[in-house]
Length: 122
Image 1 (cartoon, rainbow, N blue to C red):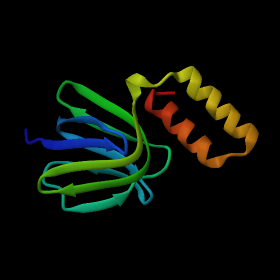
Image 2 (cartoon, rainbow, N blue to C red):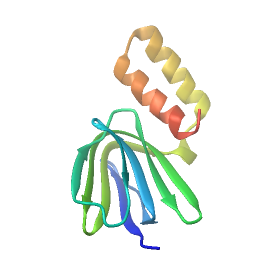
Image 3 (cartoon, helix red, strand yellow):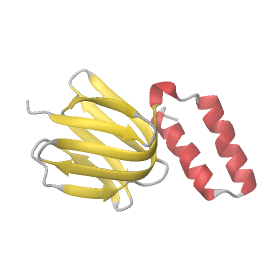
């Protein structure tokens, strides 16, 4: 099966790099799925979204906020302002952040916290 080369990069560092059979990301225009051979695309990532990278042996999930998704012949590049791997997310802290954001009426912080919770399956 054909694969995509995927780079997930935040402002601070390269978060993940490897081969995948599909990438699913939430953009400001809605959720998009990228398969090998996809037409070139540039999309703006939704704040509080997730990126799912599907591989033969499973999937890699990251919470992302801000940035862009680029699809070229060379593969998929996710350039996020903030990206955090699901395995690195503390669900209790994310729930507390969501509660705090609700109490303060901070919609941006609430979207980010909810994205982190989605990334860990909650």
